[in-house]
Length: 255
Image (cartoon, rainbow, N blue to C red; front, top):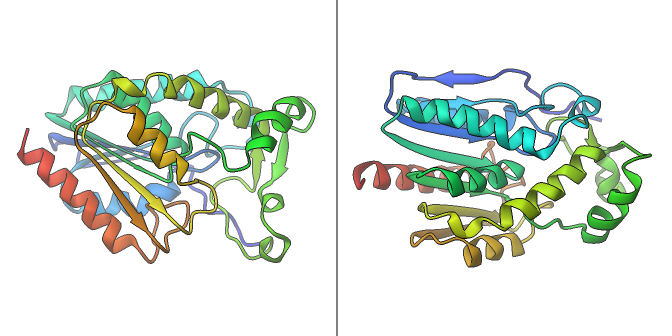
């Protein structure tokens, strides 16, 4: 098995810039998956903040100790800090980070929101909503490779933990239910990115966002080759980054 893509560090760049961008990684992952994008945005002079969520960048067992409100509260505090020094603010979230980004946008007047591979509804519905709810009290972690077909188990290079923290996964499920109820409060311009090669996020998640937010400016970018961690380097990075740059420039200049 190849080593996971893992980073225990938090990052902040260009703290004197008045354009703030808060990056949020996904479930059981780390800032690693946002580093490629962070460096791209750093070079343009934006104030970038990218931190590990509570229970991330440590161990799956540690992650299992946290409730979903811990992730939301931490992100609110970090984003509020960024708002206090910024004239305009943006949020970019991957997977569960996209869910948290939507939550922030339901609370704050964000100038622009970008979410990729967002997971508001899980692909493995029965296993996640029923089996895991019952079994996570006894089986608290599970190897990530066990959820993919056998032929790929020793080929995929996973992000973050090698195992899913299943108690925390149950919290992720609860968080989605909470966030979905408040999607109508999201009014920010939004770019939703979905890849047809994503093995985790289903297309229905795009529809959930589009049909429930109150944003008047909604754009969906569909790509063919990117993996679930859409903001890390992949075959579609050039197109994805171009769309991100366009949203940022348009809403920096127009507001």
